[in-house]
Image (tube, helix red, strand yellow):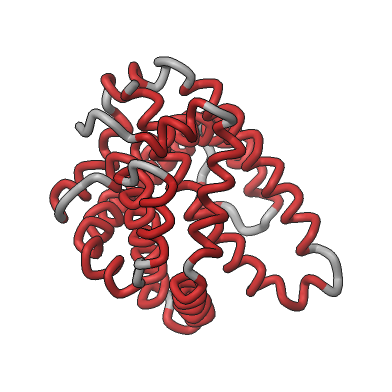
Length: 260
């Protein structure tokens, strides 16, 4: 562990939410070539998803992880704002991919394993509830399942959202496929959960969760407008890219909070 991270110390110590948004914005606007290239690749991959399915979903998901890993490392290793800005200006998409592809693939595989395991557990819950899936023929008949799963899914989502920044920081600092694969499983680490209650982590993350919920609500209202709906796909990619960068800053500020 490095002993000094002046940039993150400043970000967490003085107006952490404002500084999180500031660092996100600076990465997006200070290297327009990187931003436009990354968003174009994401847009193309997402356009291809209805036609190629997994052949587009997997590269899109892995590339999204690559961007988050790359930026997380960049902000974590910057000692001051000047070094941060210089690192942003020198950033290249091909460099981000070449340095972080194996870690991203490892983490993606792990998330898939965890998701499949979750579906299996939820399937057992539904099966043991007495609902027979094979007898369901209409959407209305799915309501009992939705009622059974609603509360567990909401609680699980809140728990995952709370600890996810620290898990993402572990993924970002992984060095190879194996470490990338193992990092998502730290979501079950007692040590990580204990760390998440240290210092100002709960307050910071609760504010971030509130800000994210508000942003998602406003975005939903915005893209539902008739005129905006025409370019909703493009807006979604722009927002998704901004959210990925935002997530990266949150992860490393959160890590620095529990390290202090």
